[in-house]
Each structure stands twice: as structure tokens, then as C-alpha cells.
Length: 467
Image 1 (tube, rainbow, N blue to C red):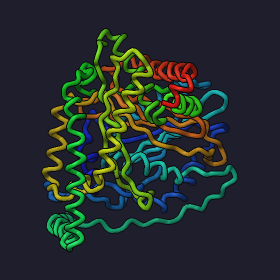
Image 2: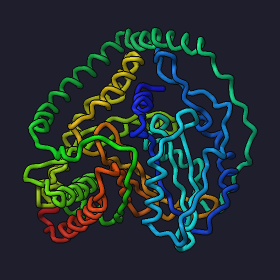
Image 3: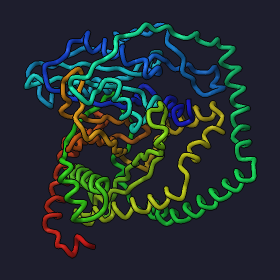
């Protein structure tokens, strides 16, 4: 595993399952369970990782590794269930919340797929779960090719026989881990030993120093800004899940009239959701912010489809204490512009690769200690995963909608996964069950935030739009 992947694996605990997921709804009629199983068996050779399990190195002398599961049974990973017919959105959300809130079995390949029948209008759904150590959100979009087709009449290959490779012995695993711990840092240093390598590293260090210096005022401002710490706290074993959606045309209209990017508009709408939540709880005050971690992919074009995590993150202060929606958008836009300048000057992939020099035992202990201690720095996670703008099909059935599921951990008790498909953007909200009995206030507030930004965009004059 890479250091980032290993960090996600080590962070898993009884109350913090760290899988990502989704709920996709399709037009009917539902396929048979056997058809779904046969479809996956035909696709699995394209992604061998789905037949592999995690093997830990004794005493954490090396990072965990992937080995073939000799006892792999696809019938364990593909499940079949139903809601009382005709099931609406509420019934599907409740079922998805229970399924996605349950941990994956770490002794088996880290994924599940649930076929759900009984939805109204003859529709059906797929609930998918895959551990974060296997794949990040951007690569996960590529993995949709496992089951999804671009045409309803696509053909599929027949399932193929598979034989697992021999698992290494414990002695071989330890020996390989020790050898890698010694040789990998040396290879990295050798790579930079040439004149050009040293010069390049020096230039990168200078650029990084300048960019970090540029970010100091922003960091200092965040340290002095009051955050909604009432949203932080311990995480229990159960989850609440809610969702809302918006049309792309709405968001693009706001962007055109008021400036910024579609992502800026999305964050401004989410700000209204948290504002409504805190106001309902009596915790809203002027100048207050909800600090959200916003993961950013640093995956290059030639790395698409690789099963590892290539992500960095920035922290954005959502100005919930600001009553004016346009002012909230301006604040978010300014912060994101500052973060972009820093990221352009820093090679985030190099920063992530520095984890290769961290001893696996220290990495394991550090991740667990950090999560056990909790944190008060950020209150939410907000991630935007771009999806396809063309219709997708599974076994000839057209996908109607999709909702993303993002895990929570380390004292951050709510996350929002944004997923785009065709002309719709959905907001999937995952929250701790006990801490967010009012999660519907947050989802409804996001929708109200979109509506008020659309109204402000319609009132914008040509002069203000140009500005």
C-alpha cells in the first residue's frame, strides 16, 4: 500500500468504518440476482484488487500489502434485499444508511454490492461499498466501468475461471518489508542524486517555501476565526443519511451572474445549510464559520484507473455567520482562489510521497493516536466527485440518479459527498446518528441556499455580473 492508503486502512475502527460508497437508482424492471453476479464475474478480471484482501506485516514492520484471497466467494460480496413496495426516497435512504453504516469485514476483499428491489414506479437500486484504502473518488469514477455501459444493448463477456496466487509466508512478508524499508528511501534519494535532480528539488523547495509563506496570512486568519466547535465530538457506530439535489443549469447561472466556479457556488449553498442547522440549535452568532476539509485530487491523466489514493486537501471556512448569500459566495471564492495559488506552487504529489520515508509502525501509531485524540480544527468534510455527463446503463437499465457516500472520522461528525450525473448534482449527507437527529435541516438548508443564490443571480445587474 502507499502511505496514504495505509493511513486510511489504519484509521478504520469499530465506530469509524472508512469505506466510500454510493446509491444508484435505475429504471425498472430489476435484473435478477444471478444476472448481477454473472455480470460482475465477467468484469472482475479487469480489477484484480477486488479478489484481494489486506495482509498486515507482523509488528507493522512494513505497510500492509494486497494478496489474493484463496477463499474468495462473490456471493458473499453481492447481496440481495428489498424495501416494502412501493418504497420511496425515505425508505431507500433509511436502508442505505444502515447498509453503509456497517463495517466491511477486514479479513475479506474490501467491497460489497447490494441489489435493492421494491422501489416505486418499478425502479431498483444498487448500494456499493469499497474501502477508502482501495480507491479515491476520482479513480472510483473510472471503476464504474466495471458494471456500467454507455449503451443499453452492450454485450458482456462470460465469467472466467480464476486461481489465486500463492500467499507469501510470514517470514517472506517480514523479509520483504525490511528490504523495502531500506531500499525504497535509497531509491528515492538516488533519483535526486543527479545534478538536474538536485537542481529540480532545489527549485521545488524554493517554490514550496514561497507558497507556504503566501499561505501564512490565511492560516493565521483561520487560527483567529471562531469555528462551530459544537459540531465536533465523539462518533458512534450508527449513521444518518440524507440527500438533496440541484440542476447544473441553476449552478451555472449563478456562476455566470455572480462569478466564481460551480464548486464555489456549491460550497456557498452548503454554507446556508450549516447556517440553518446552527440557527435551529441556537448556536449561530456573527463571525462564526464551519471549517470544512475539501479533498482535492492530484491524480494525473496517465494515472486514471489506478487503484490507489492520489489526494490532497484544503480547509475552507464556510461563513455561516454571514446573512448575505452573495457575501458568503464572495468569501468562499476568495479562499478557494488563495488555495489554488498555493497548490499551483507546491507539488502535492511530492508532499504525499514523503510518506514513503515514514516508518510503517510510526505511521500506524500516529494515525490511531490522532483519531483517538480527536480534533477541533475542522467540522465537516465536503468532497465533489465529477461524474459522467452521458447516460449510463446496467444490464440495459438506465441509471436515473446517483448519490455519493463519504465516511466520517476523527471528531468530524458530518460529511457531504457531491456527485454529478447528466444535468443533476446530488448532495449525499452522512452524519453521526446521535449527533445529527436534525440532519434534514442541513439537507433542506442546502436546497434553500441554492434557491437564494439563483434568486440573487436573477437580480444581478450587468455591471455587477461583469465585476
